[in-house]
Length: 150
Image 1 (cartoon, rainbow, N blue to C red):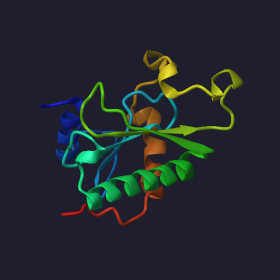
Image 2 (tube, helix red, strand yellow):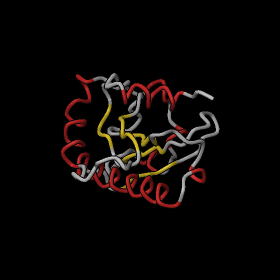
Image 3 (tube, helix red, strand yellow):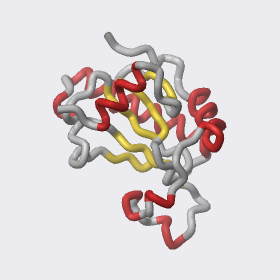
Image 4 (cartoon, rainbow, N blue to C red):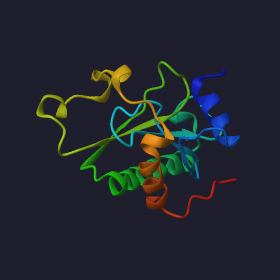
């Protein structure tokens, strides 16, 4: 089965995706297609697997560690007060993690809402012009030990 996650990983491998943050040990960090929160990222495993439990223990630990490290980088790059993490895989049945930076200055009316409650169509699409600075800060904030496992 080919999913949007498979296609996105193929683009990352081909250096054909402008929103790539970095190649990590477990896969790819990319900025989200819609920036519902400034700095919203995804972690995509490479190779793609159906879900977290399909990974062997070491690979699973590496994916989860990379997710935490990407969260650390998001906090450093955006000034977020926390990161919301989500993994579902129902609509796209391939492992991927969503990382949403959350900010102290969010309006009270939306501060407690989960990301899927927002109007994603109204969120700005990723563009290098609008999001290049945050992309650069994220790249700079990631730990240097991002060599993929073999």
